[in-house]
Image 1 (cartoon, helix red, strand yellow):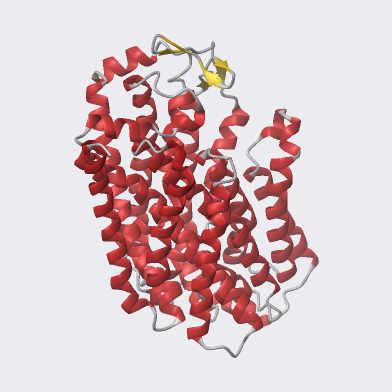
Image 2: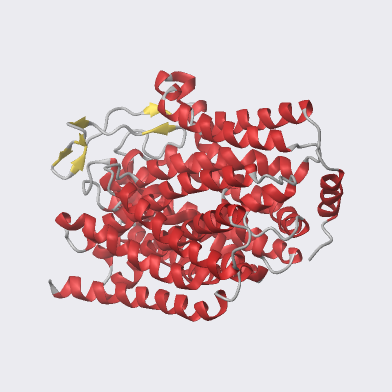
Length: 521
């Protein structure tokens, strides 16, 4: 091990030690009952709720996946994806947050999203809750796998350990497992707050230094202008490929003429924003905030953080192409541009601390996914079938579930698909389409019925799978991002089935009216 790698390692491990320490600290406060372990006893302040929600949402995708897309094919896809996510973030906080915070408490103090659905519709057989928990298990396990891919690519690239990808994936998984297992929801949220701040600062510093060393506006624009359609948000650069890799001639990447980024492509990217309405790791923060009156402040914090972070992530990919034009010749490899710039621009010890921003992004997401899956399995499935068990037993079941989803996530990470952007897009679509329309209808349409909720949730999840694996292969208009058609179909199913069925219990409408007033705190 060289002195440079050793110093970088010291910076990274110092960060990891801090995260585990936070988990141990909150273990004392998070293990007394289920409300504390799964929802932090609804005690999140505005800053913690806002930053932890956004950090858990963005994941390693923010520092690796999104910059990688911008680096490889220019601004088109990356720009419109970022716009869609920024709009979706604002709408979610503006429309959903307060109503869900109040309604989840009105609905017999629901502490998970599946439990909210079940109590919202008075589903005495718990069919809705079990289906929701299973969907969370399937798609979040894929999500966890995408974060472990980030760990693997990160450690392999930084420490030149090309033959140790499996070991690096497992190491990252174990670190997240430890503090999530012992600390519960509050440990996850507090570490996410730290990690969100670190991600934000590191993004700004790396972009500023990369921009300066690339020659400023004139230097960056001059270098990128040689690549057709690279800076055109209505176009997309097309790398010249040979055997699946971009041709690099004397250090200069080769591009074909580029193509238009069609209206259909733009709509597909904007559709990413729809996913926010169905993201359990974000929605649970709405439910956990200390008072509904604090949501307005949280909204501004979250939206500003999101807008700036997304903008900088795209800019890093573009500036990275000017800074190191021929460093990466595949889309997957390009996701390491942030790491490349950090190692090249900063002294090893400082680089190690800054590179912890990538670990922060991945850890803040994977821990949230793991605690969400465990709460669904333990609180929504196990407790449903074993009603007389104690809370202590349920919390132990949750810990076992965390271990199980960690193992499954490692399997996904080692499956061979190592594009963080593509893995995340599939899981995002599944969760967004299965839960997003139902969340909106549950909160804002009193007439929504239990059969409609079940039908809408199942149709959204199934359409994503069918569209992605079969229909999209037809090309043309069918190549649209699977979240959009699945979201629309799910919403239509909920609407039509609700009109064809009746609300089963008048108490459901009374609870809806109480929640609509927004008076609970």
